[in-house]
Image (tube, rainbow, N blue to C red; front, side, top):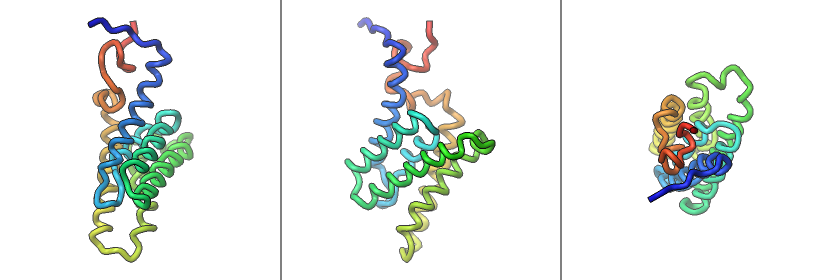
Length: 168
């Protein structure tokens, strides 16, 4: 089977669309009705710009499709806050540091969840702390292993279709 190489414009669109589809599908994996930490980690690792915006749109679509209204609203609010935090702190000296974006994602997730967890049992608070830790760890993993985790950022990592493949 012969594959035709994609033009450069279409290759640049594959990565953000792949992230949007991935965040949409991963939004279905929420813990205890609180949130889905993996799409939030992908949103935090994507940073500002088109990839981050596509992650927010994927989280919104996934929240609409897979989650009940209140849980979907919390998921979308956390994704929007993480993306807005990336935009707000992009020009600061803290943004490129290793623990800033994972810490920002965890803190903003706690900010969104804490409004709904007031006067709730300690089990839900513990689940929220677990989701915060998982979001921070996944964001750190995605930021450190960006070159080795091509399957997360590409739909198909074939030498002719992958946006990270060396260009001839």
